[in-house]
Image 1 (cartoon, helix red, strand yellow):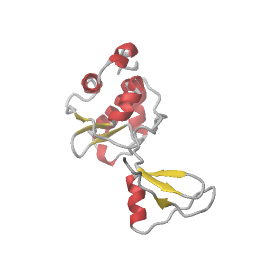
Image 2 (tube, helix red, strand yellow; image 1 turned 135 degrees about the vertical axis):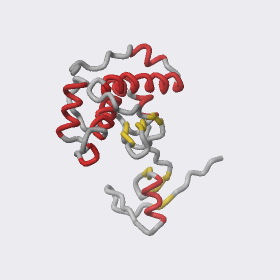
Image 3 (cartoon, rainbow, N blue to C red; image 1 turned 90 degrees about the horizontal axis):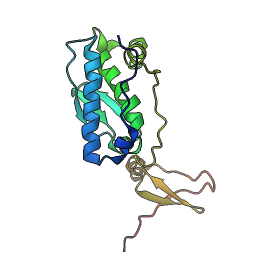
Length: 182
């Protein structure tokens, strides 16, 4: 088994890519990771790749639909880390799922950690440390006595259904204030 990370993708090349080129390069990286996985599991099916994941997650091995979902906002903001860590992380999930008893194994269990270390030469890390502000939309504006607060669509829906939120600073109930576009 290989124990070295996948070859680094030149950071200057990544930085110069358009979004379309970046997505194509990510597909190439998935292919490279898949080929490495095939060294230990030749029957491993190639995953499909989608760039439709939202929120704080960088990637997801979407086993039921047969592929990997990647967050295009976090990919754009963290190009090198995606190529070096996120794609191998998700491919490790893809490989483990296709092993005997794979669906019954823990997502970040012993087998996944072994693949990360022994196949990809990486320290098994469960979470990323990306700045997620750009990836999480918070388009709903609420106000208290001291400031404005931005709510996500999910939190706004909870308010619409009767939930109330208070400001941690002034303790006043937050009131929805849609922005007036002129």
